[in-house]
Every structure is written in structure tokens, then in C-alpha cells.
Length: 210
Ligand code: URA
Image 1 (cartoon, rainbow, N blue to C red):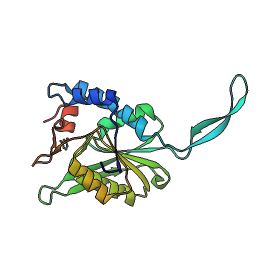
Image 2 (spheres, rainbow, N blue to C red):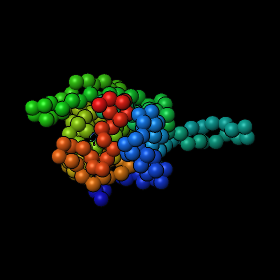
Image 3 (cartoon, helix red, strand yellow):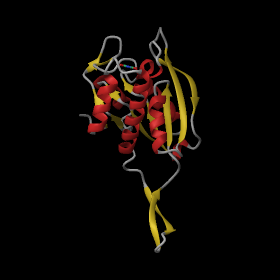
Image 4 (cartoon, protein in one colour):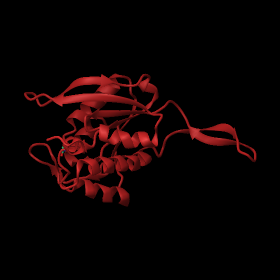
């Protein structure tokens, strides 16, 4: 496996992911499971956050106690399915700043086109976590990360739920400086760009659309 990629294969994540994959799982349960998995993924993604210490007093004596260093994190959701990962991340880090990038696929060129961008200020000083549950072709993830870099981001991690080997290869070629975290790497992409075996269209399953 590409050493840019971390597969977070904790048993709880794998069990919940299996429930998500099943076609009979309802939207409500799908969303709840994604939220739970995203909290567990985030815990692992943030394992190496820089720390400092702060002078505090316990009821017994003063101590220098560990606290997070630096500016607040920025979580950036790639619309619309990224929003399903955002909730669980904010459960864990409620003070994080939040941004959104909207991309659609142009029917003629098949290339991603940006239709919305709102990101936190001072991106260059923050750890930026870009999220989209499905890393399929990587076209939109790659374009979103390019846009975040143009907006100043220097320290970016990408988090997804499922990845296709094709998506990992393309994203790591386009952005070799961006670590990729996923709960699983599936077999391949279908002819129409679905991850196989996958779980179908994550946005549709999350929001009950077709
Ligand atoms: N996006 C999805 O929602 N599902 C896939 O399988 C691929 C891209």
C-alpha cells in the first residue's frame, strides 16, 4: 500500500461500515453510522496534533498540563456528501472552523467545476482536513485540494470513508504532500465511476434522494 495512505481498520469501524454497505440500511441509520465512523476516523487522523503546555492548578498543586497548540483546525466539506462526515468530526472537535467547497461534474468535459467556496480565514496557519466519503476517480477531491492550496492551505489531510485504488493513485500523484485516511480500500471503480463493491451513491443514501 502507498505510504501516503492510512487505512483505519479498527474493528468498530469495519463492523459499522459493513452495516452501511448493506442496501437495506435506511438513510437514518446510514447517517448515524457515518457520523459514528467519522468520529473514530478523526480520532486517528488527529493523533499527531502538536501540543504545548499550560500552567494550571489542580485542587492539589500547580502543574504544566498538556493542551493543543496552534490555531483552531479547519474542517472542509466537499459538498454534498462531505457533510455526512462533518457532523462526527465536529462532535469530537466542536471548536474547529468549517469550510465548504461545492463541485459539480461538467457533462461535456467531465471535469469538476466549482460552484461554491467559503473557507475559514488564515488557512495557511491551520491544519486543514478536507472530507468526502467516497474517493472514486479523485477528480473532485483533487480539484478541491488544489483550490484549498490556492486559498493558502499548506498543511492538508484528506479523509474519506471508502477509496478505490484508482482514486488513491490519482490523488497521491496530484497531491503527494497530502496524507489520505480511509476506513477501507475497495476492489476497483466501475465503468461509470462507482466504487465496487462500495455502498452505492453516498449522497443519495445519506439524504434519501435518487
Ligand atoms: N460517489 C459515490 O457516492 N459512490 C461511489 O461509489 C463513487 C462516487
